[in-house]
Image (cartoon, rainbow, N blue to C red; front, side, top):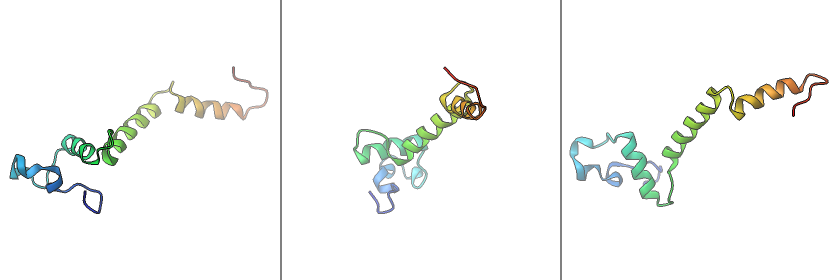
Length: 85
């Protein structure tokens, strides 16, 4: 892997597929190849960041999620005499 930890064309194997792809990897291809090259059995930094941001966005967008409920409970907890089960 390159020193900047960003995969370059040679590491992606794009030139073996077609020179048209040089410097122009599809995101899904990059994420899969990054995972393969790191060999940790999971996502690499780019893939992991994408998954994390999507999950956090879903939690923030769901009014019944823990993230939203925690914010609401925190505001209610400041009112004297109010208890939550």
